Structure formats: C-alpha cells, structure tokens
Image 1 (tube, helix red, strand yellow):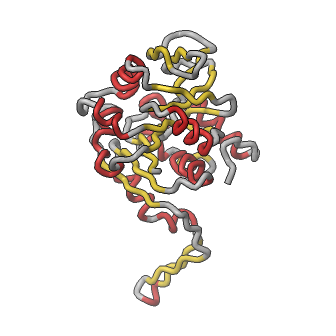
Image 2: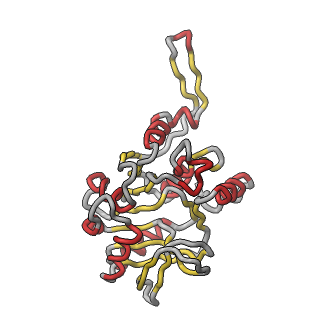
Image 3: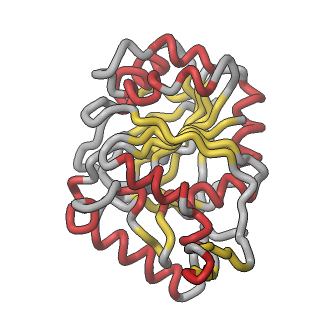
Length: 257
C-alpha cells in the first residue's frame, strides 16, 4: 500500500524556518520531519511513498537525490578526478516519487494530481508536518474491517484543528474546521483511503479537509481510528522546539525504529 505525503504548502505559521525550505524539510534531530514520518511507516513495512511537493519542491528532490551524502561518511578523492566514495551506506527500503503538484494548489487538488501514481488501490495519506506513535498496521486492519471509503486517525488534543463528532460505531457524524474549543477529537491525518475518493475531488481549488471530508461525512463513508497515544504537529517554532527536545532527550515516542 502506497503512502501519499502532503508536502507542498508554504508553512507560513513557522516562517522562521520555512522561508528557505519546505516545512516538511525542517529538521528534528538533524533530519527532516518528513524523514521521521517515513521512518514511522517503514517500521510497519510500508515503503512506497508519493510526496506531493509544491513550495520549493526542488529542495525535496535534491535531498533525496543526495540521500547518501546526508546520511553517510563520504570521501571526495580529487586525485582521481573527483571520485566519490560513500562509506557505511545507510540505505532505506524506500521507493520515493516526488511530484511537483503546483505552488498554490489546495490539499485536495494536490491529492488529485498524484492519482496516476497511486493507481486503482487503497492508499494511505498524511501531512508532512506531524509525527505520532500510531500503530499503522492496526490502522490499516481497522480500515479494511469496515469497508467504508475513508478512515482518518483522531486524537484528543487541546488545539485548534478540524473537529470531529464521532458516533458509538466509530463513524464520523460531522466534520468542521477549527474553532476556539478544547478537548475535542481532531483530525490527526494518518488516513487510509479507497481510490473512489479521487472522484470526490473536483480540481486544484478543492480543499480536502472541507470539501472531500465533508462529502464523505454526508455519505456516511468516513470512519475514524481513535488514537490515545502520542501525536504532535509542527505548526509553530514552539512545537518544533518541543519535538527537538523530545528527540535530544531520547524520549521521542514516534521513534520505534
């Protein structure tokens, strides 16, 4: 099952870091948060990624094209016409497709633009700025158990995110955008989607969280996998420092590899 990662936004709320690079390339412990998310999925055996890039998308492509230079010791032998020797290669079992989905395209539009790379199969999708300790295998099993079009992971957080109303059968009864309320179940990303979801995306201006999730709710086709563990987005510099501190202290709950 492929994983689609949304990594094309401007990251305006953390502009101190995102002015010179895409938000998913902001580093936690010396590695982009995008890498941390991919390592989470890879731990559970999911290794094929489609990255929806946009703002400064070339930086994402350059980083993956030089992956060994970022992660290994390297000898540059100029006496042999600049021969490059990579030592102790730290390889990953990944297949990564980076797609330029446009500069100002909305989230739904970005997902629509990578449809040809997903094909006619279920796929996973999440945002390129949040880490968690969700059991990905259990999430997929839950999605396959109910036969609805979409599953999203929800967490209880005192933050202003898209708010979910969840029924006793784990069906999502309503979805609304952020308001000033605390203690609600919120959309944490980490979704599993059937390919029919592509049909609900009208074009580049489609906002997935409003247009598509709202339509799925109205059809009774959106379920939630309720996660009671760790989840943290990186919208602000303060949240970035929080994640950095957890990593530096060896207490990063998302690190299972």
